Length: 142
Image 1 (cartoon, one colour):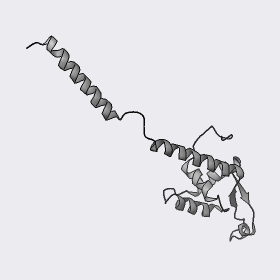
Image 2 (cartoon, helix red, strand yellow; image 1 turned 60 degrees about the vertical axis):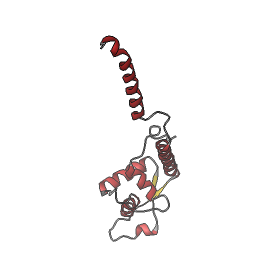
Image 3 (cartoon, helix red, strand yellow; image 1 turned 120 degrees about the horizontal axis):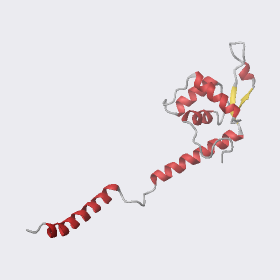
Image 4 (cartoon, helix red, strand yellow; image 1 turned 90 degrees about the vertical axis):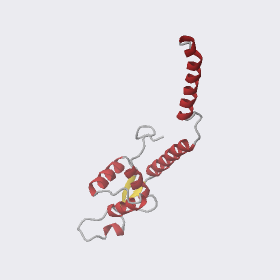
């Protein structure tokens, strides 16, 4: 179970894709934005504010951590480019979310033991017709 969030609380799509985007390789913010867009088939386009707000929360939860490498020092600006990588906790969160999603899909694909609504309505309607066909002549003789 996820000890640092309420049990089985689903991840937002954006957070899930951010974690997936750095699962194999550390990335800087812009690369994360592009990877999330690609992984989500362009459904999710993160603004910088959304991305860095999410990164801040993920850092606080220790699901990701910053990485300082020579590549992260190579920027045109005066400040180094931060790379982020997944922690063991972050990897565990991804696995738990994948299991939760698989469980949802399995439930959706499982044939239901309940009858289809139309079958119930048809059966009940037929029962009512039989009842009224039997009882009405008693009250309204010909």
